[in-house]
Length: 278
Ligand SMILES: NC(=O)c1ccc[n+]([C@@H]2O[C@H](COP(=O)([O-])OP(=O)(O)OC[C@H]3O[C@@H](n4cnc5c(N)ncnc54)[C@H](OP(=O)(O)O)[C@@H]3O)[C@@H](O)[C@H]2O)c1
Image (cartoon, rainbow, N blue to C red; front, side):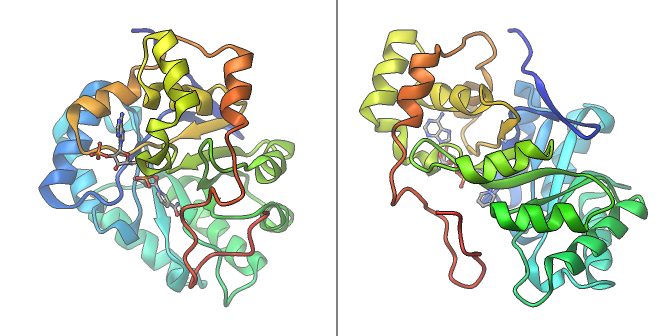
Protein backbone atom coordinates (compact mmCIF):
# COMPACT_ATOMS: atom_id res chain seq x y z
CA UNK A 1 0.00 0.00 0.00
CA UNK A 2 1.32 3.46 -0.80
CA UNK A 3 1.95 5.74 2.16
CA UNK A 4 -0.36 8.46 3.36
CA UNK A 5 1.03 11.99 3.32
CA UNK A 6 1.80 14.20 6.30
CA UNK A 7 0.45 17.73 6.52
CA UNK A 8 3.12 20.40 7.07
CA UNK A 9 2.42 23.33 9.33
CA UNK A 10 5.12 25.63 10.68
CA UNK A 11 7.69 22.85 10.97
CA UNK A 12 5.30 20.14 12.16
CA UNK A 13 4.73 17.12 9.89
CA UNK A 14 1.39 15.69 11.00
CA UNK A 15 0.29 12.35 9.48
CA UNK A 16 -2.97 13.00 7.59
CA UNK A 17 -4.77 10.13 9.31
CA UNK A 18 -4.45 9.90 13.08
CA UNK A 19 -6.06 7.47 15.48
CA UNK A 20 -8.74 8.98 17.75
CA UNK A 21 -8.82 7.38 21.20
CA UNK A 22 -11.94 8.79 22.83
CA UNK A 23 -13.88 7.03 24.50
CA UNK A 24 -11.52 4.04 24.62
CA UNK A 25 -10.44 3.11 28.14
CA UNK A 26 -8.39 0.40 29.85
CA UNK A 27 -7.53 -2.79 27.99
CA UNK A 28 -9.83 -1.89 25.08
CA UNK A 29 -7.72 1.25 24.54
CA UNK A 30 -4.41 -0.65 24.71
CA UNK A 31 -5.72 -3.17 22.16
CA UNK A 32 -7.09 -0.53 19.79
CA UNK A 33 -3.94 1.65 19.85
CA UNK A 34 -1.82 -1.48 19.35
CA UNK A 35 -3.98 -2.46 16.37
CA UNK A 36 -3.69 1.06 14.95
CA UNK A 37 0.11 1.08 15.20
CA UNK A 38 0.26 -2.39 13.64
CA UNK A 39 -1.97 -1.16 10.79
CA UNK A 40 0.47 1.70 10.12
CA UNK A 41 -1.00 4.70 11.94
CA UNK A 42 1.77 7.01 13.18
CA UNK A 43 -0.39 9.68 14.76
CA UNK A 44 -2.32 9.11 18.00
CA UNK A 45 -4.81 11.58 19.46
CA UNK A 46 -5.47 11.54 23.21
CA UNK A 47 -6.36 14.05 25.95
CA UNK A 48 -6.10 14.18 29.71
CA UNK A 49 -9.92 14.29 29.79
CA UNK A 50 -10.11 10.90 28.01
CA UNK A 51 -8.61 9.10 31.02
CA UNK A 52 -6.53 6.87 28.73
CA UNK A 53 -3.09 8.50 28.48
CA UNK A 54 -1.44 5.71 30.49
CA UNK A 55 -2.93 3.07 28.15
CA UNK A 56 -1.91 5.05 25.05
CA UNK A 57 1.67 5.25 26.39
CA UNK A 58 1.65 1.54 27.24
CA UNK A 59 0.50 0.54 23.75
CA UNK A 60 3.11 2.80 22.10
CA UNK A 61 5.94 1.32 24.19
CA UNK A 62 4.75 -2.25 23.54
CA UNK A 63 4.47 -1.67 19.78
CA UNK A 64 8.19 -1.64 19.12
CA UNK A 65 7.68 1.38 16.86
CA UNK A 66 10.32 3.98 17.80
CA UNK A 67 8.77 6.83 19.78
CA UNK A 68 10.14 9.43 17.35
CA UNK A 69 8.17 7.86 14.48
CA UNK A 70 4.83 8.48 16.21
CA UNK A 71 3.14 11.87 16.37
CA UNK A 72 1.45 12.05 19.79
CA UNK A 73 -1.12 14.72 20.63
CA UNK A 74 -2.64 15.40 24.02
CA UNK A 75 -4.92 18.18 25.28
CA UNK A 76 -5.38 20.34 28.38
CA UNK A 77 -8.98 20.94 29.52
CA UNK A 78 -10.42 24.38 30.42
CA UNK A 79 -10.15 24.11 34.23
CA UNK A 80 -6.37 23.71 33.83
CA UNK A 81 -5.45 26.51 31.43
CA UNK A 82 -4.18 29.17 33.89
CA UNK A 83 -0.48 30.04 34.10
CA UNK A 84 1.27 27.58 36.40
CA UNK A 85 -1.65 25.15 36.28
CA UNK A 86 -1.38 24.32 32.58
CA UNK A 87 2.33 23.58 32.88
CA UNK A 88 1.63 21.18 35.79
CA UNK A 89 -1.24 19.59 33.86
CA UNK A 90 1.03 18.88 30.89
CA UNK A 91 3.70 17.47 33.21
CA UNK A 92 1.06 15.13 34.64
CA UNK A 93 0.01 14.07 31.12
CA UNK A 94 3.65 13.31 30.24
CA UNK A 95 3.99 11.26 33.40
CA UNK A 96 0.87 9.23 32.56
CA UNK A 97 2.03 8.77 28.97
CA UNK A 98 5.53 7.80 30.19
CA UNK A 99 7.11 10.29 27.76
CA UNK A 100 9.59 13.17 28.05
CA UNK A 101 7.59 15.27 25.64
CA UNK A 102 4.70 15.06 23.20
CA UNK A 103 4.57 16.23 19.61
CA UNK A 104 1.56 18.44 20.16
CA UNK A 105 -0.32 19.95 23.10
CA UNK A 106 -3.74 21.46 22.40
CA UNK A 107 -6.00 23.69 24.43
CA UNK A 108 -8.99 21.28 24.47
CA UNK A 109 -11.72 23.96 24.62
CA UNK A 110 -11.32 27.76 24.85
CA UNK A 111 -11.44 29.08 28.42
CA UNK A 112 -14.48 31.01 29.59
CA UNK A 113 -12.51 32.59 32.46
CA UNK A 114 -9.22 33.57 30.85
CA UNK A 115 -8.62 35.68 27.76
CA UNK A 116 -7.33 33.97 24.63
CA UNK A 117 -4.12 36.02 25.04
CA UNK A 118 -3.57 34.69 28.59
CA UNK A 119 -4.17 31.09 27.54
CA UNK A 120 -1.92 31.51 24.51
CA UNK A 121 0.97 32.95 26.55
CA UNK A 122 0.84 29.96 28.90
CA UNK A 123 0.65 27.54 25.97
CA UNK A 124 3.77 29.25 24.55
CA UNK A 125 5.51 28.58 27.86
CA UNK A 126 4.65 24.87 27.64
CA UNK A 127 6.50 24.77 24.33
CA UNK A 128 9.40 26.90 25.59
CA UNK A 129 9.91 24.46 28.46
CA UNK A 130 10.27 21.59 25.97
CA UNK A 131 7.19 19.67 27.10
CA UNK A 132 5.64 19.91 23.61
CA UNK A 133 7.40 20.13 20.26
CA UNK A 134 4.41 21.98 18.84
CA UNK A 135 1.32 23.72 20.21
CA UNK A 136 -2.22 24.08 18.95
CA UNK A 137 -5.85 24.65 19.83
CA UNK A 138 -9.16 22.82 19.61
CA UNK A 139 -12.74 24.03 19.24
CA UNK A 140 -11.54 27.52 18.31
CA UNK A 141 -13.77 29.56 15.96
CA UNK A 142 -12.36 31.80 13.20
CA UNK A 143 -12.34 34.75 15.61
CA UNK A 144 -10.59 32.79 18.36
CA UNK A 145 -8.00 31.54 15.84
CA UNK A 146 -7.32 35.17 14.85
CA UNK A 147 -7.06 36.23 18.51
CA UNK A 148 -4.70 33.38 19.37
CA UNK A 149 -2.59 34.05 16.29
CA UNK A 150 -2.14 37.71 17.24
CA UNK A 151 -1.20 36.76 20.82
CA UNK A 152 1.25 33.96 20.09
CA UNK A 153 4.99 34.15 19.65
CA UNK A 154 5.30 30.42 18.84
CA UNK A 155 3.45 29.01 15.82
CA UNK A 156 0.09 27.37 16.36
CA UNK A 157 0.15 24.30 14.13
CA UNK A 158 -3.41 22.99 14.22
CA UNK A 159 -6.98 23.74 15.24
CA UNK A 160 -8.88 20.50 15.98
CA UNK A 161 -12.64 20.83 15.44
CA UNK A 162 -15.67 18.74 14.56
CA UNK A 163 -15.81 18.31 10.79
CA UNK A 164 -17.57 15.85 8.51
CA UNK A 165 -19.77 16.04 5.40
CA UNK A 166 -22.86 17.17 7.35
CA UNK A 167 -21.05 20.17 8.94
CA UNK A 168 -19.67 23.02 6.86
CA UNK A 169 -16.54 24.49 8.44
CA UNK A 170 -15.34 26.73 5.57
CA UNK A 171 -15.03 29.83 7.71
CA UNK A 172 -12.77 28.40 10.39
CA UNK A 173 -10.78 26.33 7.88
CA UNK A 174 -10.12 29.50 5.85
CA UNK A 175 -9.00 31.30 9.04
CA UNK A 176 -6.50 28.48 9.63
CA UNK A 177 -5.26 28.33 6.03
CA UNK A 178 -4.62 32.09 5.93
CA UNK A 179 -2.14 31.57 8.77
CA UNK A 180 -0.60 28.28 7.65
CA UNK A 181 -2.36 26.45 10.49
CA UNK A 182 -3.52 22.91 9.71
CA UNK A 183 -7.08 21.80 10.50
CA UNK A 184 -7.71 18.50 12.29
CA UNK A 185 -11.18 16.99 11.83
CA UNK A 186 -12.59 15.28 14.90
CA UNK A 187 -15.63 13.04 14.66
CA UNK A 188 -14.62 12.81 10.98
CA UNK A 189 -17.20 10.06 10.36
CA UNK A 190 -19.91 11.98 12.20
CA UNK A 191 -19.63 9.24 14.84
CA UNK A 192 -20.73 6.77 12.21
CA UNK A 193 -24.05 8.50 11.52
CA UNK A 194 -23.39 9.33 7.90
CA UNK A 195 -22.08 5.97 6.75
CA UNK A 196 -25.52 5.11 5.40
CA UNK A 197 -25.85 8.37 3.49
CA UNK A 198 -27.03 7.61 -0.06
CA UNK A 199 -24.59 9.94 -1.83
CA UNK A 200 -21.63 8.59 0.11
CA UNK A 201 -22.77 4.98 -0.36
CA UNK A 202 -23.21 5.33 -4.09
CA UNK A 203 -19.74 6.86 -4.53
CA UNK A 204 -18.30 4.09 -2.34
CA UNK A 205 -20.05 1.41 -4.39
CA UNK A 206 -18.82 2.86 -7.69
CA UNK A 207 -15.22 3.03 -6.41
CA UNK A 208 -15.30 -0.37 -4.66
CA UNK A 209 -14.57 1.28 -1.31
CA UNK A 210 -16.44 1.56 1.97
CA UNK A 211 -18.40 4.69 2.95
CA UNK A 212 -15.91 5.37 5.79
CA UNK A 213 -12.99 5.24 3.35
CA UNK A 214 -14.73 7.66 0.99
CA UNK A 215 -15.42 10.14 3.80
CA UNK A 216 -11.86 9.94 5.14
CA UNK A 217 -10.50 10.48 1.62
CA UNK A 218 -12.77 13.55 1.34
CA UNK A 219 -11.14 14.95 4.49
CA UNK A 220 -7.53 14.42 3.57
CA UNK A 221 -7.89 15.60 -0.02
CA UNK A 222 -8.66 19.06 1.36
CA UNK A 223 -5.62 21.27 1.66
CA UNK A 224 -4.18 21.23 5.19
CA UNK A 225 -6.83 18.86 6.59
CA UNK A 226 -6.04 15.89 8.87
CA UNK A 227 -8.61 13.41 10.26
CA UNK A 228 -8.57 11.38 13.50
CA UNK A 229 -11.18 8.59 13.18
CA UNK A 230 -11.80 6.29 16.15
CA UNK A 231 -12.67 2.62 16.05
CA UNK A 232 -12.47 -0.18 18.59
CA UNK A 233 -12.58 -2.85 15.87
CA UNK A 234 -9.28 -4.11 14.39
CA UNK A 235 -10.96 -4.54 10.96
CA UNK A 236 -12.37 -1.02 10.89
CA UNK A 237 -9.09 0.40 12.24
CA UNK A 238 -7.36 -1.14 9.19
CA UNK A 239 -10.13 -0.10 6.82
CA UNK A 240 -9.92 3.55 7.92
CA UNK A 241 -6.18 3.67 7.27
CA UNK A 242 -6.28 1.89 3.89
CA UNK A 243 -7.07 4.97 1.83
CA UNK A 244 -3.71 5.84 0.27
CA UNK A 245 -4.32 4.02 -3.00
CA UNK A 246 -7.35 5.82 -4.41
CA UNK A 247 -8.56 9.38 -4.89
CA UNK A 248 -11.88 11.16 -5.26
CA UNK A 249 -12.54 13.18 -8.42
CA UNK A 250 -13.50 16.85 -7.98
CA UNK A 251 -17.19 16.06 -8.75
CA UNK A 252 -17.34 13.50 -5.94
CA UNK A 253 -15.56 15.89 -3.53
CA UNK A 254 -18.16 18.56 -4.38
CA UNK A 255 -21.11 16.15 -4.03
CA UNK A 256 -19.93 15.16 -0.53
CA UNK A 257 -19.32 18.79 0.50
CA UNK A 258 -22.86 19.60 -0.66
CA UNK A 259 -24.28 17.28 2.04
CA UNK A 260 -23.68 19.88 4.79
CA UNK A 261 -26.78 21.01 6.65
CA UNK A 262 -27.58 23.61 9.29
CA UNK A 263 -28.20 21.04 12.03
CA UNK A 264 -25.08 19.03 11.22
CA UNK A 265 -23.16 19.80 14.42
CA UNK A 266 -23.07 16.87 16.86
CA UNK A 267 -20.80 18.11 19.66
CA UNK A 268 -22.00 21.28 21.36
CA UNK A 269 -21.49 21.05 25.15
CA UNK A 270 -23.36 23.86 26.92
CA UNK A 271 -20.61 24.28 29.52
CA UNK A 272 -17.71 24.58 27.06
CA UNK A 273 -18.78 25.49 23.52
CA UNK A 274 -17.83 28.92 22.16
CA UNK A 275 -20.16 30.93 19.92
CA UNK A 276 -19.63 28.86 16.76
CA UNK A 277 -19.02 30.41 13.36
CA UNK A 278 -22.41 29.16 12.15
N1 LIG B 1 -11.07 17.95 20.47
C1 LIG B 1 -12.26 17.55 20.82
O1 LIG B 1 -13.01 18.27 21.52
C2 LIG B 1 -12.76 16.20 20.38
C3 LIG B 1 -14.12 15.90 20.49
C4 LIG B 1 -14.55 14.64 20.03
C5 LIG B 1 -13.63 13.74 19.48
N2 LIG B 1 -12.31 14.07 19.42
C6 LIG B 1 -11.30 13.12 18.84
O2 LIG B 1 -11.77 12.67 17.60
C7 LIG B 1 -11.79 11.23 17.58
C8 LIG B 1 -12.84 10.70 16.63
O3 LIG B 1 -14.11 11.24 16.90
P1 LIG B 1 -15.37 10.39 17.34
O4 LIG B 1 -14.93 9.17 18.04
O5 LIG B 1 -16.29 11.33 18.03
O6 LIG B 1 -16.10 10.03 15.98
P2 LIG B 1 -15.77 9.24 14.59
O7 LIG B 1 -14.34 8.86 14.54
O8 LIG B 1 -16.35 10.08 13.53
O9 LIG B 1 -16.69 7.97 14.70
C9 LIG B 1 -16.45 6.92 15.60
C10 LIG B 1 -17.63 5.95 15.47
O10 LIG B 1 -17.69 5.45 14.14
C11 LIG B 1 -17.58 4.02 14.16
N3 LIG B 1 -16.68 3.64 13.06
C12 LIG B 1 -15.36 3.93 12.92
N4 LIG B 1 -14.89 3.47 11.76
C13 LIG B 1 -15.91 2.84 11.15
C14 LIG B 1 -16.03 2.15 9.93
N5 LIG B 1 -14.99 2.01 9.10
N6 LIG B 1 -17.25 1.63 9.60
C15 LIG B 1 -18.31 1.75 10.45
N7 LIG B 1 -18.26 2.41 11.62
C16 LIG B 1 -17.06 2.94 11.97
C17 LIG B 1 -16.98 3.66 15.51
O11 LIG B 1 -17.46 2.43 15.95
P3 LIG B 1 -16.46 1.21 16.31
O12 LIG B 1 -15.52 1.71 17.39
O13 LIG B 1 -17.38 0.15 16.79
O14 LIG B 1 -15.74 0.85 15.04
C18 LIG B 1 -17.52 4.80 16.39
O15 LIG B 1 -18.82 4.49 16.82
C19 LIG B 1 -12.01 10.87 19.05
O16 LIG B 1 -11.69 9.54 19.30
C20 LIG B 1 -11.10 11.88 19.72
O17 LIG B 1 -9.75 11.44 19.64
C21 LIG B 1 -11.86 15.30 19.83
